[in-house]
Structures are given as structure tokens and as C-alpha cells.
Length: 242
Ligand SMILES: NC(=O)c1ccc[n+]([C@@H]2O[C@H](COP(=O)([O-])OP(=O)(O)OC[C@H]3O[C@@H](n4cnc5c(N)ncnc54)[C@H](OP(=O)(O)O)[C@@H]3O)[C@@H](O)[C@H]2O)c1
Image 1: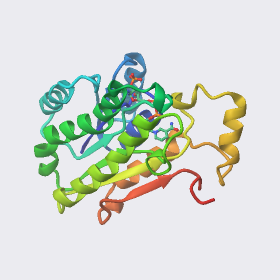
Image 2: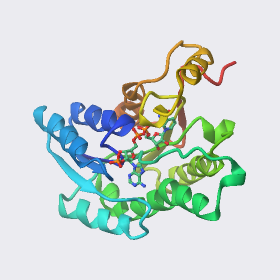
Image 3: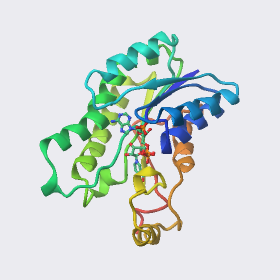
Image 4: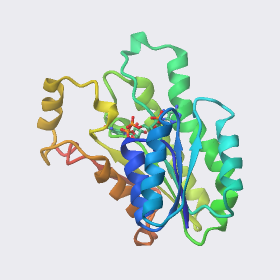
């Protein structure tokens, strides 16, 4: 069994790649800039006895998905799990945004995952039980006060993933996880006060960890989730309950 995780050099993607490795998958570790970190992730997976290969690509480049598809095909005949995780969250007020900011967010979160899924579909169809998982965000539902292109692109993932779930059934499940505030590089710019304020709004009393989200992704990729498709698992410590 083989899995591809995009954005696996750090944060949620890293934890997901390692969780899938621990679950018995060979893993394709995609990254953009952090090669050394990606190498460490691959080494950790190999240490558990699974194989791990590196796949560099900037998803902002329109030709990246085709090159990634070719590389994944060259590395093996099968692909069973595809996790669309890569992305970043630039903070910007709407007045400061340009068309290019929207294009960039839609490219990385929607157009590249769509093209990559298209590239890898024949391999996924050959799997006895394939799973595609998108990492969207609580901001797809709530909106973002300083990231309308990001929130819009994350919301676009919901409609796309549900459509895929309908079209790719019965052979392939397609689900999403929607993290709340997870302690990764994405929150690195927070002031201590902003961080305390975030935690105050979370009923479970702490930020999420990458492993919290990776566990949900690994579940959706596992046989235990074989009758779940088109769903979104909210992994946010109860953030949306209040
Ligand atoms: N952290 C949160 O609070 C939170 C909440 C909701 C949703 N999310 C979502 O969770 C996912 C992972 O985020 P994270 O918090 O784990 O962030 P992170 O630690 O910053 O990791 C982001 C990963 O995505 C890769 N990446 C970013 N832009 C890319 C691009 N244009 N092309 C290719 N790869 C790219 C990075 O690669 P390099 O580092 O190698 O460049 C890195 O591996 C993202 O989709 C994010 O929107 C995060």
C-alpha cells in the first residue's frame, strides 16, 4: 500500500506521513522548500521498515501536478491514499489583496489538487480501496478576517471534494478534515496574547497538535472508514460549539 502526502516536510503533513508510515504505507513525501526536513521525515518512515521517497514541487507552478504524476507513476504501480495537505495562510485584509493573491490560493488549494487527482486517478482506481483526503480549515465555514483568498480557496475544497466523492464512488472514498488552530509554522507569527486568546476560545483548552489532525486523516485513510465518503471531520477542540 502506498500513500502520497503533499506538504509533508513539516506540520500536519509531516505528522500525517509518519502516521501513514506507522500504519504500514510506503509514503511519497512531497515538499516545496524544506528538503532537509523532508529527508528527516523520509528517514523516520524508513526506520519503521516502510519505504519513503521524496517528491519536490511548488504547487503554484501550473505544470507541477503533471510532473508529480509522472514521478509517482515512475516510483510504483499503485497508489492507495492521496492526502491534499500542502498550503499556507497569508494574512491580508481584503483591501490589500490583488487578483494574484486569489489566483495563488485557488491554485494551491483547488487547481493543483484537482490536476494532481486527475493525474493519479488511474492508479487510485487500481487500488482495492483508495482514499483521498483534503485538509481544509475551520475558516472555510467561519470565514477569515485577514485571509479572504485563503478562506475562499478552503471553502472551494469542500464542494470539489464532495463532487469527487459522488463521482469516484464506489471504488474511492473522498473526505476532508477541517482543523481549527493547530500549533505549526502557520501560527508562528502569533503574539503571546493572540495565542492565549486562541486557546481561550477552544473548549478542549489547548491548540491542536499536528498529530491530532494526522490521526483523523489516518482514520479516513483506513479500512475503518470504508463506509464514509463526502464527509468532513472537524478537528478543532470544540471551537465551533460555542
Ligand atoms: N495550522 C493550522 O492552524 C491550520 C488550520 C487549518 C488548516 N490548516 C491547513 O493544514 C495544511 C498544513 O498546514 P500546516 O499548519 O501543517 O503548515 P506548515 O507547517 O507551514 O506546512 C505547510 C506544508 O505545505 C507545503 N507548502 C506550502 N505551500 C506550498 C506550495 N505552494 N507548494 C507546495 N508545497 C507547499 C510546505 O512545504 P515547504 O515547507 O517544504 O515549503 C509544508 O510542507 C494547510 O493546507 C493549512 O492550510 C492548518
